Length: 75
Image (tube, rainbow, N blue to C red; front, side, top):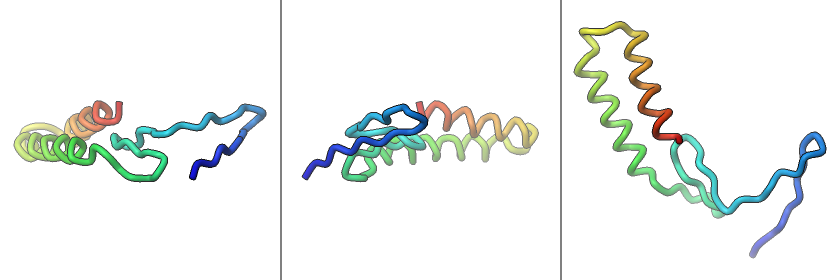
């Protein structure tokens, strides 16, 4: 069953979409989460890199590495 809702905010109509990307995962209109394996792989790689370099670089640099992986995963 399909329902066409018209929802607005500040006189702007919010468009319907059959899917959206959120935190690197694609959610469809049935609220199922696809591509979780891709996100888990990127997370695993990021953790391995951080684990290997944590004794050599600062905490700030570690956070930059972590965020670099997840900004690319979410785009």
